[in-house]
Image (cartoon, rainbow, N blue to C red; front, side, top):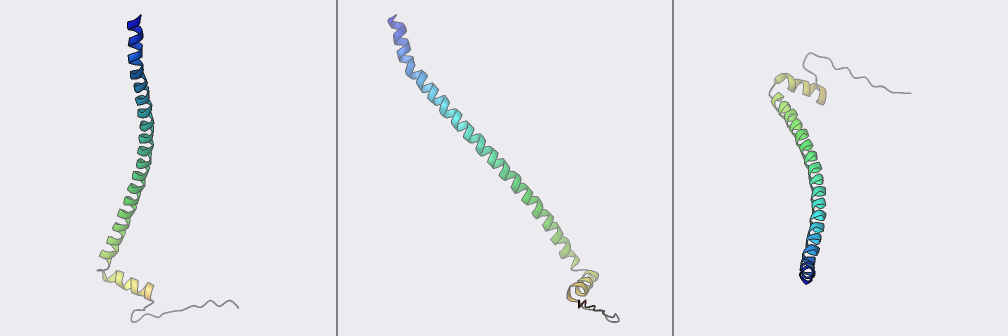
Length: 98
């Protein structure tokens, strides 16, 4: 009987240590899972931003390439600056509401 009591007394502290260690492990495991979820949402957001920036880059590269084209330069001068080529007539319509 004394051996059994001594066995439980010696192993009681081991059991308490194992329960505490398991509790700490579970707590940290949940914290890590929460961090992992947060990081995965950040990763998705960053990947979406990268895709948007790549599309913008492609659009800007196309615009930059079109600057070498004479027709696109003429189109920009007519539409944005209001210039008129030689031989054309410019018609300005003012809508005055009286």
